[in-house]
Amino acid sequence: RGELELTESENRGRELFFAEYNPYFPDLSGADCAHCHSGSNFENDLYMNNGLDSDADMLDAGRELVTGDPADKGRFKVPTLRNIEVTFPYMHDGRFSTLEEVLDHYNDGLQLSASLEPQLAYTMETGLMLTEEDKADLIAFLKTLTDQSLLNDPKYASPF
Image (tube, rainbow, N blue to C red; front, top):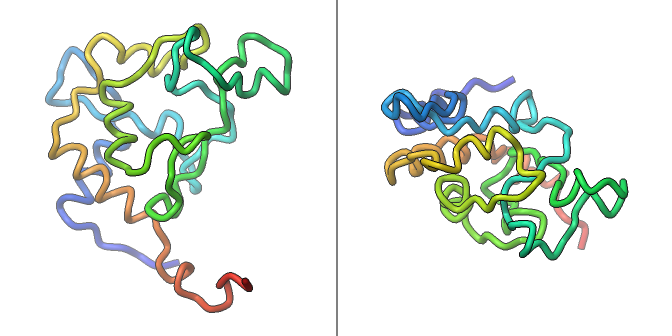
């Protein structure tokens, strides 16, 4: 197991990643990413609606197509954040090309729908209140989740 020493920016991003959203104390508020992206693989093995589309604009019903349950409309598998730096485009439909776009979505681009996750719905009034520096630090931390040794190991290279 390799140990990684984080830079100041990466460490601040880590703190924001794990800190809970708090609309009453913005200076103490975090991005609350770990509600959905936790554990050793930074995912939760669940299907969740992350506010990409409102009910009226939703073109992909997501998990509802499998279960037949309207409560699953707009829910998709929460992905791992391992190697997130190199797994773009992002979201189930590839609508975001950059991590910056992803953070902008969570910061102030959520769309209300009946199955929107409560943790995200709670942020609708104020957004996550992330500054540009906060977003840059979060991205710096997210990039530490990329395993460069795996990516550069010939054993795992594409055979094509």
